[in-house]
Image (cartoon, one colour):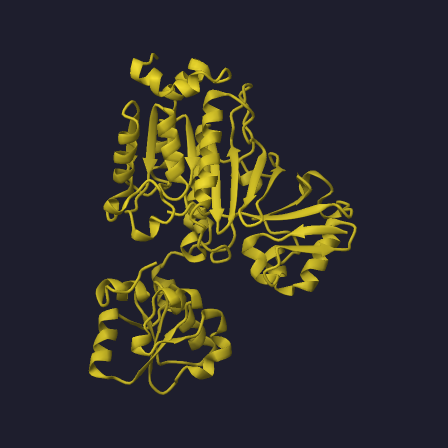
Length: 384
Length: 92
């Protein structure tokens, strides 16, 4: 594989590094890397891999660019809001480097398509945001014998490692299941959407991830194989911890139902029947207010969320979910009570808790939460 | 004696403290001190059988306790015990 004059000029700062050279640049050009997730981590990973000259970059994401992404997803600009992320990313990367191929997959990675998508790539960089997809990417990479360069973040913490590294002798390094055989139960570790993340953190951690991808492709240096790098932005402490293949880890032979594996219960007909709570739409809530109806509105979010957007003009009272049992006496039993949160999930749990433990039967969950209210009723409310 | 580093997702159970100074001389006893001081963390650290949960790794220095003597691994004054849970954020 040869380089044009323009490419040689573009990549000259790589080529003049003795350990890297034209050979390192050729390996990058020949490489095919799949980046799963075009978010906070995917942004720097894609920008640096494209800039560095990785010849073929695949991008998997099913989401659209949202205003709340721009705090950290530096791939995108205001004009991209509402566009499919893979399309916006591809445009940006092609503008950055016209000498590489960008392949987009505007789909959610799933057991039914993962092997088919991953098989054409040499290496995968996992920057997804949930446990089911983490295990799916890992298992697909293990089955196909691909190296998986992994990074994840939460608030101020980041983790980076290289899973399933193919050694020169054909053996493979430890993978995600050797480190963490099973995921935490849903809800224990909040997602970034619920728990927040310092915007610059994915920039730091994603850049480290891109660096590991380049090291693995070119064979220079010592990749983070069997080592978990941890970074704490608050204390500015970093640690590199060692882990090994675990003989107890079952062999990964086929892909499974990862939602089920991660304890995420699908709304099967029966389960739904048992868990159903009464709901009210945001338009119905608005109508009640317009009619001057007598109802109580309870907001079970956290105080810092209330500060971003609230329904105080409808008389919303803030009782964060964790404090609901202790404040049950503040919630009326003799009139309609509407409970809301950001999207309707926590308020649904609050309704179930109050019904089962405190005997309420007058509670309604606001469907879609304050996000739906901001979309359909009051567009001046900030969404987050 | 050992310093236990508490990971961010579990700090809500330790009054937001990022570390805990234990006086015990092995990992298991040091973690017990932690759970006695902050009982709320216990259910997140151990399963019903009293085993460290599978989505949590415990390291002494830079080594996984599974490659040492598990919870019997000895600790000294300067030892750092790291509790490292799986995190999944990539922030789409």
